[in-house]
Length: 569
DNA sequence: CTAGGGTTAG
Image 1 (spheres, chains in turn blue, cyan):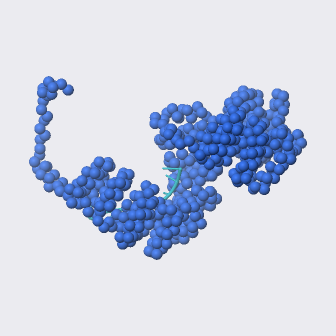
Image 2 (spheres, rainbow, N blue to C red):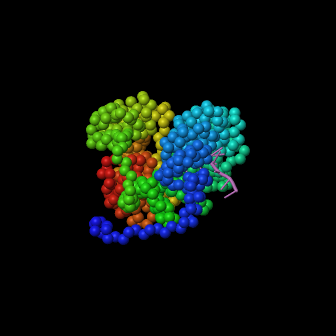
Image 3 (cartoon, rainbow, N blue to C red):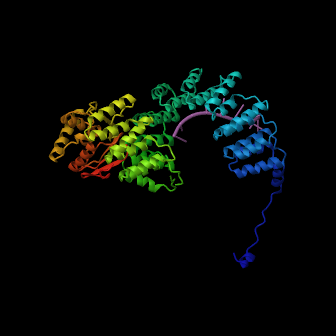
């Protein structure tokens, strides 16, 4: 602004003052009454505002007022300023039980269990006796060990009849993994609230006791969104995504309203299943029901679409995120070593990969060893393969994959004696091969197939299609890769055992149950075998279908007789 | 009118 303008501007208008209003305000607002300050404290929304009120308390000698001090402390805590909260607490003379409980609660809520416990002991030292409120606060963050001590104090003080305290105790035992004690406390509760039921439900679900969880869940008369979420998530987190989806449908049928957490859980289940249609449906459900796509939901959507093989949709969601979380500034973890091992392994630089794993700063996990062993198999390096397998077996690190890969290598060389030895070794060690399972989603339903499985209602049609597929394959000059069958059986039997691999059953079902030309998406829990891979390539050419197969490691996009993995997986 | 503390899901 120029100085000329400054001088030519009219002076600001003088506010007209109503004298009676002014004197009234002066009388009522000064000095501020504790009532007014309490109200202000409850309503204030910014830290700046709180600091102003704090100043007013000091200015007017109200800084030892128990209620105002308590409210101020609570507001500081809820705004995440535990430092101010604690400073206020330390300057307060003889804090009462309310103040103690509140500050303990604030620390417990922020996961500062050591500090919460410290204040608790300080309180006991000062001769202030804890009550049921104090215990339900302190129990929230404490360890199992401390929980047990607190439990005995609860009983001593006769506070163990309180519903909140009991729920807190169930939660402590549950978090500490002591399911038995959690159940004991729970079962002795004379009345069980929705929250205490949900706490116990969470305990079962977290520890994989899904049958117990479901029993409790089905017995619950009143169900809110939290308990639905707990139950659905229990299935999702324990390899039962199909059950998770089924339960989610029941949730909708029961007119319960899903929230963001439900969506996150169900999207994860869809990803595990490769259930693209269900995932898409969920996406549109969110759009129709005004459930906002937060970054977390967007990430879950991208994860789901990626795992379902629809990279186009994943990209679409990704491009719509304004603010992107990024996985930069991360410490190299075991996954990154995994990438390196895969890279070196595929390039045939096995010794280098082996050296890398041996000299890692982090403890190598079975997946990493598996990657290395897989590379040995790929390049037929039996010598190193044996060395690694021996190491794994002797260090108790072997899983079913170790044995399978090793016996694969021997089988490929026709060394059936060694194959038999490995099988015995595997049997003796007690590890079992995870059965191969393929699933396909058709019309919003997930169909699962195990090798040689005859349980599907359309079994007859599926096997007819398998026959037809064999005919097409033979006509194209295909010979089954019988050498990959591990059992020492006749060639004809080997062919038969290959024919009913779970991915072929799923593929046959996909062909008979969808319109010609529709892309087929299959999810397999293990790695796809090389015979199934070759067959799927040919089928994609013969039928003109795009086939996406997600196995344990990666996606295979089969189009017109070739696969995106370049036959290198 | 008058004041204050507690539980479950990711």
